[in-house]
Length: 73
Image 1: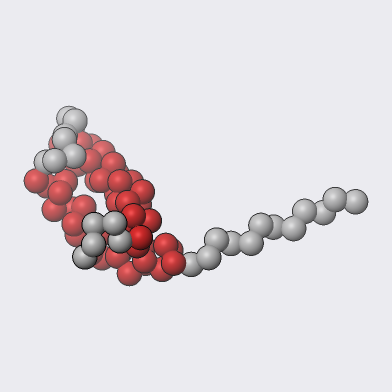
Image 2: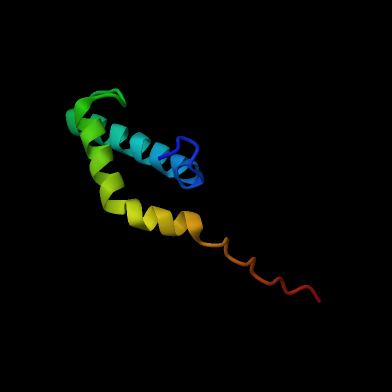
């Protein structure tokens, strides 16, 4: 895989959100702050990315939704 693969670049914000969420969830489970590099957090992030990867690719390749029409009279 080329490091600048456009698909990967488009997925980075979603992956960063997963990392943020899983870090917070693990901190809540333990009752104290944890690092995003914590082995439990990393394993959970990998699990989520593997499970949701197909959906993430669809989201990244779908055209943006059309803006809703405004009713200006």
